[in-house]
Image 1 (cartoon, rainbow, N blue to C red):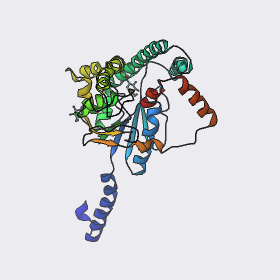
Image 2 (cartoon, rainbow, N blue to C red; image 1 turned 90 degrees about the horizontal axis):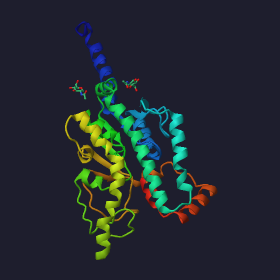
Image 3 (cartoon, rainbow, N blue to C red; image 1 turned 120 degrees about the vertical axis):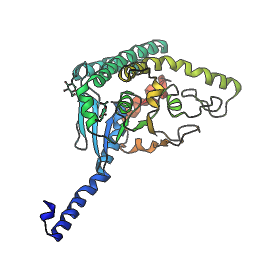
Image 4 (cartoon, rainbow, N blue to C red; image 1 turned 90 degrees about the vertical axis):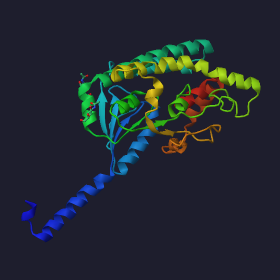
Length: 311
Ligand SMILES: *[C@@H]1O[C@H](CO)[C@@H](O)[C@H](O)[C@H]1NC(C)=O
Ligand SMILES: *[C@@H]1O[C@H](CO)[C@@H](O)[C@H](O)[C@H]1NC(C)=O
């Protein structure tokens, strides 16, 4: 057909084709697998920016979730959960009340472990439903995404990226038990790097160094509860034994929502980027009521610093 066109018209058609194709060639398709709740809030700003720069984003979220709602700057795709939104809301309201109760720290500790177990089991069922949904997986596979943007605290996104062989960018504040060090093969000399919650600096006495080495043991159980399901899910999917570190080291770039203003110096790898300021994009002044309640609470609770780290 093209040969039938006069020469100037053929040139025009080529130019039009070029104009149509060029902007798309520069735009990417991003699959976003967020962790819900507060984790999503700063990731949402990144997705908005990606959209503004002409990229297409598909956000893959559990049907029942906290904070992930439809927006005009991304396509929301949901996967099934075994619980309804009402049941999930009830779970959150009923179980996280304990944060505001003034109880013995041991009681609070056991309560938080019990809740963590329940929440982990819920996330596990959703994750299993996602990876076993072959029609959804093949639909995602045929969408030819260029990159997966995910929060590795919910490792389902990393598993999916590895399975679909799509490069992954991790977006996180922190991941416990040194998984960020292991996942990036970053040196982690415990004589110089204070563990979270120890409040030590990079200059420690001998005893502090010993404590710094022992401290992570307390977090191991926490990690066992929250991360143990994912090697199981991945091993079933890949039909070979896969560890949490195997899953995490699929990440090409790790974007840390941290900054050395808050954190002590530590070794970093070339694929770790610190983007702490991103948490301040959507800033609002705190209300008096909120500040009052917060200070009351922090006077009572030493554990708050840890919660702060996880958010
Ligand atoms: C797979 O996911 C789609 C989209 O979320 C859903 O409509 C469908 O019911 C799911 N299928 C199975 C077998 O879970
Ligand atoms: C994705 O699609 C490619 C090409 O069609 C295929 O070779 C591959 O097996 C698919 N992967 C999955 C996980 O379905």
